Length: 337
Image (cartoon, rainbow, N blue to C red; front, side):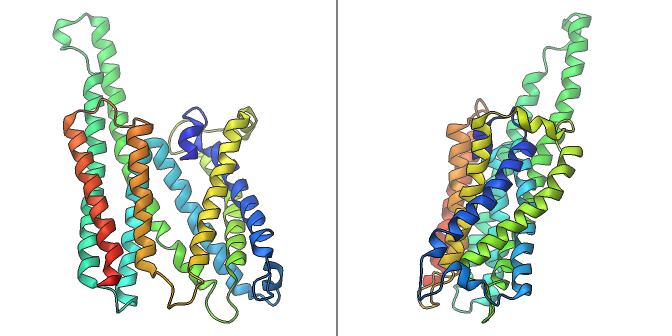
């Protein structure tokens, strides 16, 4: 969301520089504040004594996988909007996680979970369909009157607009495709994070978060220059453009990274409670759909991404929203029945 607030004039590649720095600084802040409060006489620094290098590597690799997926997702947001890219990506990630949960959690109600997965996938289809329909409507609005009834100069202008609409059609499908790829890659993040915490030599929650953030920051040093030179959307960028950003734009990037790592810390800490008190992976994954619903609300009502799209598109959005809510209810209740 902070990337959307930063505005379209601030390219996501430049935003992501601040985002990566904010992720690392946020993890350090959490580790040396909340992580340094003594709990059973063990602080964050104590937990690093005798730490397993292999466990550290799993956490850093989790940061790398997340970073790759997140760069693709932020690109998808810049192309298709938050109300399209985020729900599609998070839904694909949820489907992958719930499929794993079905086979690893015997007490999980398989029927309710399977129905929830099907409903979730149908909601994704309606989401993508609404976006593509809106793109078609906006392309048609760019085409002016019939060329037989207009002057030659206007015909030339109309031809230019038609060529431009072809590019818009390509961008429309590109945004959906990027969101799907981001969701698939993001589905592999949490298993890596869990591997870093398994066993007697597993990392503490705060150490996991810190090394995860290190993975995000280090891989950004490789990913950001690449996407600047080979952007998916727009012209190549030079790093000197970074200095042209306003204080507000830089602050939004730092804030986005800090919010991300704070959310991860909360999720990792929730998984460190005794199994008898844990909510389980199915409910945790289902809660991610709450973020998808929030993204739809923000994109439609706040950022007006579907403005003037017509009644048919609005109906698609309404059906999509109801299906997302139904899928959230089914997957959340599955462990209880």
